[in-house]
Length: 149
Image 1 (tube, rainbow, N blue to C red):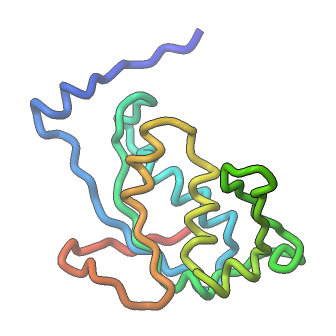
Image 2 (cartoon, helix red, strand yellow; image 1 turned 90 degrees about the horizontal axis):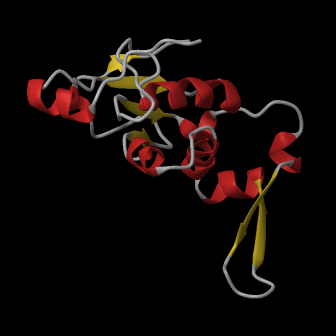
């Protein structure tokens, strides 16, 4: 039997204990899947001792140099991303390379989204993920801490 302490959302709102910190990650030369798993943990709040699955306790993550992230093996050419428009025959496909050329941040966001649970907390957590293709970002005022794995 697993024992856990249940923390209610109201407890955070009353005390103001929930402090969200900002983390800065340079993705240059790193593998997409390895970085995305760590980012998913942080924006969910799993790295905090107060983590509770039904309460949003995550932090903000800024990812820079998303255009310089690497995929292992032949995934850049072979990996296919599908989506459906909702109309008959409306399946669309794009390779990872085509998606990277069109929007380098979309590839990273899709990887992180796939590692989050499919619920309302997922949508809130994705709003705390800020991905930029280059090295510049507009969040200097938040004083992000460098994040290393």
